Image (cartoon, rainbow, N blue to C red; front, side, top):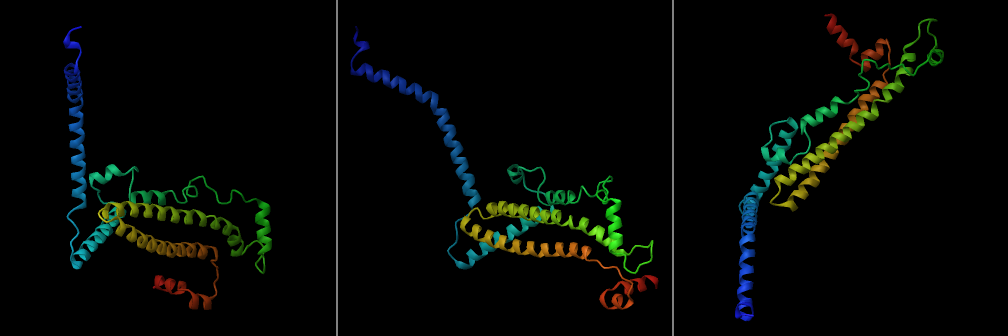
Length: 250
């Protein structure tokens, strides 16, 4: 066997050739990965912006700027104004913001609004007769009182409460999710500050949700407790019906 196939020098040459071969094949991939990492870090630094100033007034200015930016973006999202292209790519839903909320409202009471829906489909003659007998009172035979209609319609009106309150919760959940997404983007430089802001945002939204719940329940309750009367004293002192009719007649 010749000296070209054995010895330390030969082994060193062989290993050097193998090393060069691996470098040749893998170096472009290494360079590409380094370039991508540099670009990612540069974009991240650009998102973070300039460093936090040391002056307290300048810090407050930055904080207020981010808060106002959040409010503006949240308002624009609800109003359905155009989003930047980067935000569109990050979204999974086809419709966002106010459009998504409008779709939720569109489906509210959709089953009740169908042309073939009949509110008395579960009522039979016996049920109606019992309601007439129960609320007959001093009314003339053959002329049922308004209480009969109210007693029959109240269970149907009661069924409207659950879909309305469910819609309220669904809209709240979506607004909370939307606020969280915008908050994460707006306060990306200061996540701790963003979390504290999100707590305040949720607290405020919960307060508004409960106020809205009270209004929804009050509207539905007013429909259920509606009282028909022609008593002039009640109409004059407790309602503005007479006043409105008088103005219309004039």
